[in-house]
Image 1 (tube, rainbow, N blue to C red):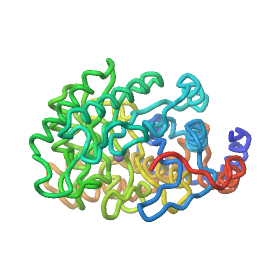
Image 2 (cartoon, helix red, strand yellow):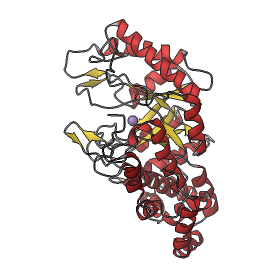
Image 3 (cartoon, rainbow, N blue to C red):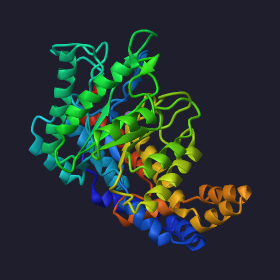
Image 4 (cartoon, rainbow, N blue to C red):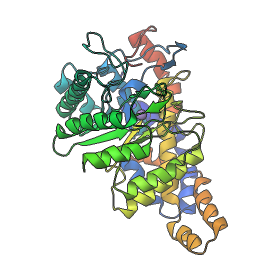
Length: 424
Ligand SMILES: [Mn+2]
């Protein structure tokens, strides 16, 4: 399904007057609105290929209907998001759920939608049909070197797929760990994992990066072999300059100070990418900004400050991805909400008065420091985000467009009610 340009224009015309009033008001009230707009227009968030279908839990899965049945349809769905918000111009592919049968055709289709290929994701946390050896007791940490070899070869195959598509990064998330005390020798598990990562690292093409994603627990519940940012940083440091830590917001123990983690990783030049989502308890994979929008803002605040301190390009120097699962919402609506929340958090961080904050900190004025941050966080920048969309050809109100045009109903008409996207 292609969205007609004229439909977006009609939508924008109908909302233009009220949008203009709101935008003019905020643009006059804040400093540097034009600079913020430029940065918002450049900022793109990759949509993961596994997030376009309805997610589920081990208790059940309730399909929305009209889900993409193959990689082509997934790219078309991201094309639809990108046409509306102009901020979803990238896809993060999962192998083997989304192996392109014809890479050139897939690349051309993505290009038609203005979508590039962000980090590739390998999978050694599941056994695939026909797979020789099982990952039940881990992959890179496994005591059997043949299992480790199989896992390394899979990752190298993922790199090959990525090269064909023009990607330039590999994300490795391992479910390796142990469920019970005594099951693993921690040191030996670490060493085996490091050796496998080194083999994958040496297979990286020039200009490629590898992101080592950590997770505190699940599916292993006693120990995880890449369990936190310290362990990830240890691997990334031992691997070399192409290796970085990837932060998934849902992969921490409760109440972890993620903004501080981000700040220090950036300081060390070892923050590679992000998986955005939100959570109440654990790796809940909820809509970005739905539970803790202030935390999201504080993270962006450190990102902006830390990237500026290193002279980094906000849009291109880190991998920005969503990693979420949509159990009770329409996946496309959920993704529209997530991207919107990311853009708002980013815009608010750009608004922080850095000079004032520095001054307050130097004076040990804790109250003024908090006020400075909250001034930005409590400013409604939605009209600015909408203006960035408008200027880059998107819709003023993507969610409204999605509903008014009954896009899900149209997708169900095209694809049917009983469809299942590949993935978990
Ligand atoms: Mn993740």
